[in-house]
Image (cartoon, rainbow, N blue to C red; front, side, top):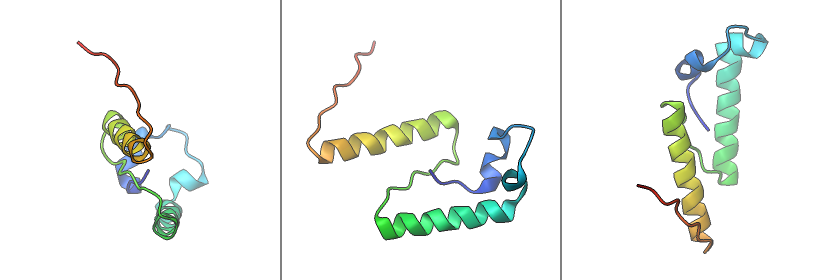
Length: 79
């Protein structure tokens, strides 16, 4: 999951540790993970939308990956 630290401010608890108080540490960690993702071929999901929207994106990525491996996942019955 990837999002700029500023986009996640409202999702944090009111008590913040050293990492959560430092935009610099967060940006450095983000850049490190983005580099790893590129080098290792990881899929990066943008997490700067709502939690529900991010959840939907994660499900889409997982379903696509499973489908590419020939694994069929039955869809839940809906109204």
